[in-house]
Amino acid sequence: MRSRREALGITQTELARELRAKGLSFHQQTVQRVEGGERPVRLDEAFLISDALSFPIYSMVKPPEGEIGSMYTAIDRLRRAAARAQEEVLEAESAFADSAEFLAIEFEDLLQRESDRSGAVVRWGAAWMVKARRVQDSLSDTARSLNGITDDSDDDWTEIAVPFPNVAEDFRWIDDEVDPWVHMPETERPEAMADMQPMALYDYVRDYMENWNEQHPEAP
Image (cartoon, rainbow, N blue to C red; front, side, top):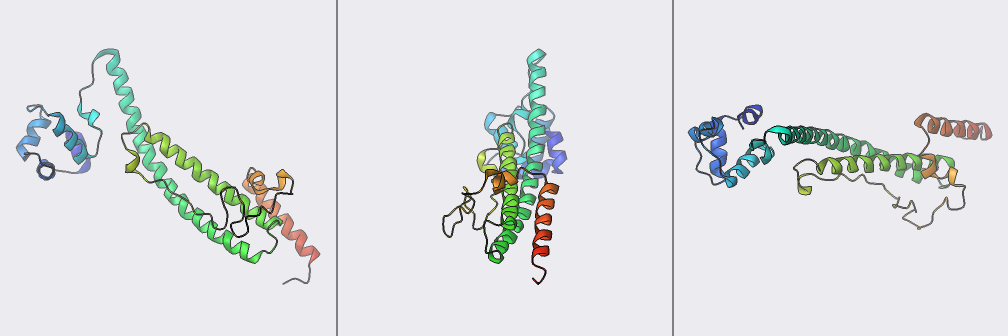
């Protein structure tokens, strides 16, 4: 309890004040006695202290001795590592969502410029949309898995959704509900192209544009 309070930069007086706001008759001396092992803590008090310090209530319980105690310590270490990892994943997911949203906006603009929605350029852009969605799903699954190890409830974190303008989950166009790639070989569809490495996708669209420019030398 003391180490957690000090890690948060909270004084005994400040902690006591917060606990009083939660309904406990705590003062600075009370916190001092609890931290010194001079005063036992009731279960209801333990829950409120845990909430005030934002750390698992099981951390306030003395682990058993022997082999079970060693296992308890290992589990505690695992849960703490999961909590740190979850924070990092959620931060990464938020940053990725911002970039994916920008990609989605650019893809929507691309659709406005390209009349041939089954063309190579649109399929190239759609392949990157598929890649973005896969990463989003992976980050979300990782955060949810970590949440099963930490003490956080599902209400303590928010799953981040990346918008995909004009594209439904099954990649039918929302405006006409027609899949423009239904008659194409599977290898030429965006979901298959998304399996390509980034440089391979870059070479794909570069080669296409070079060939197109050679065939249309008068085009602006």
